[in-house]
Picture 1: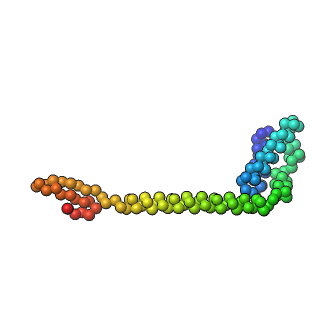
Picture 2 (picture 1 turned 90 degrees about the vertical axis):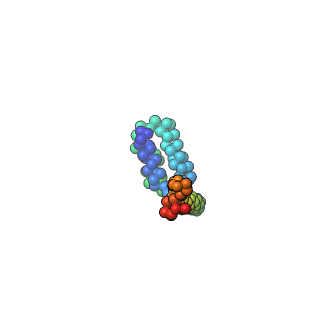
Picture 3 (picture 1 turned 135 degrees about the horizontal axis):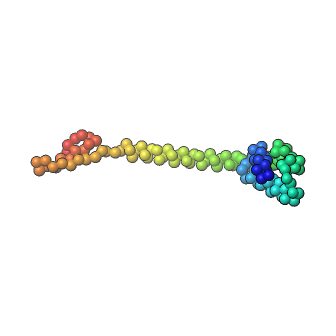
Length: 132
């Protein structure tokens, strides 16, 4: 029975298009109502839930008929702006890290070998190939 109820709730959830906060509240209310109805009426099948509450499409339609569309649209736009900002910050950070990594790898000057021959210290700079 619980599996059928979860499927019913998922279907309702998939039919509602709005911001996360509004959807979560609405789905939570529906879920609580369904479980309360099951406990109070000793429901044994999902058919009784469909008869009492309606199909997921009917519930979604009722949601949009009673919803404040302007408020939902405003929340969705705000969420979209925040998401775009976060993505932009992550991209800028990734570019900065990549540039720093490329710069640190490109500025490697090689290594030096010191050798003593005939009392003189020869330093060979590998990146230049010169003896100093």
